[in-house]
Image (cartoon, rainbow over all chains, first blue to last red; front, side, top):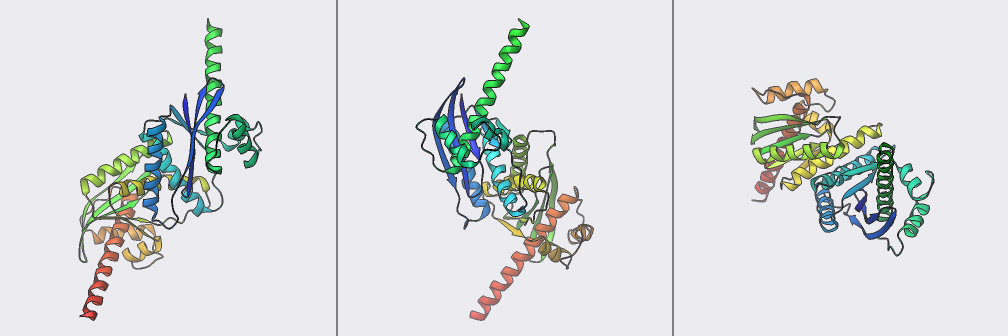
Length: 169
Length: 169
């Protein structure tokens, strides 16, 4: 399975694509989509949508995932993030790619093993889990972490389904 | 000029279309796009984008406008609004329609005459300024108020341009 992880942001949206074969993971591609703060907002959103649509067309993922957003006390930054996130979710949906959402602590637990891990620990584990990966930046690393989480989740769902089927046989 | 006003929201997005001929305004159409809370978020955003794209294709506005968002202390509701707003701005930009943004107090002042007007006063003035209008609901009324604000702004820009041209002659 080809899985796309996304870390939406108006200024920088990270993306990362991995191949998952059971529990074996390998890196395919990662990148960061940037839009300039000086540009008008509708233009920035259009650039983000078009660039992400290109990534999806090129990489043809079987599924995608994104972190849940908790939001913070700065309403303007939450609004900006929301606008970018809406466009990111729309791009995936328009391309027919189902998109899962994971709480940030689930992502940390899946990648590092503890829900309280910091960004550096996540980045280090992403590099260890995907040998040879060259990270385009911290947002791309976060996106790959979400893709890895999605792969783990799908693998454990399949394992559960096999066990249920086995119990019924 | 045909102008489209928008009041974005994930549950309900209001829209209103008016014709502006100098200072004379007339109502063309208004409506509300609803998405069900029980649906998955990417699906809701897709429905919103598609419905608004249909409105723009049908009404062929020369310009659009939306209120600036101040955001509030509830991060989750600001995030929801942001996601819907990003998709609304994208729909206008994708259709090639420029979209202006107005501070809520500017909208109230343009429609009622005072920046501190309440929702009911805005709605009553929208009905007075656009005789015969049948409002689809409060969000459609807010959308028409933004369209009226945009019309006033464009008319005063043109008046200023004429005065500058006159002074230069």
